[in-house]
Image 1 (cartoon, one colour):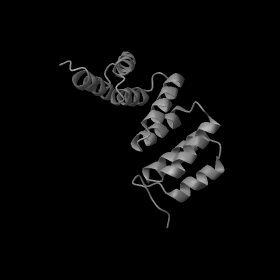
Image 2: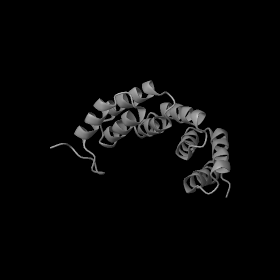
Image 3: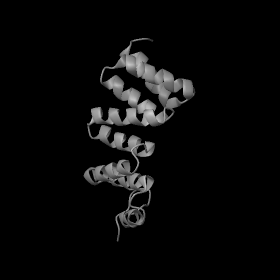
Length: 144
């Protein structure tokens, strides 16, 4: 029996789908994300890289790969990928929020504030952006 993830997907199904569409960046990204959720980060990284080889501007891959790298402690690499995602699509709220948050953690408060403010111009009511910007003001700047 195939291993299943918590969403009900199975590894055999993903492998079969990737075999049918080996250069589809969305397919490769989906499989990589499945692998990452299952803790297979080395295999996931190979799939994310294959997805970016197929389409270097695939925003979903850039963001999901960055999340995996961030969780693995590779924050500098994650920042680079979030930056690339925002170069492709400056309105990606998850990339804006996560990138700003990482910049805060690296002490780049001015750059983080700029990222959050630009994000809030595009998404003024986004709870995640408001929260992360509020944390910057509260913890990073002491403005309360």
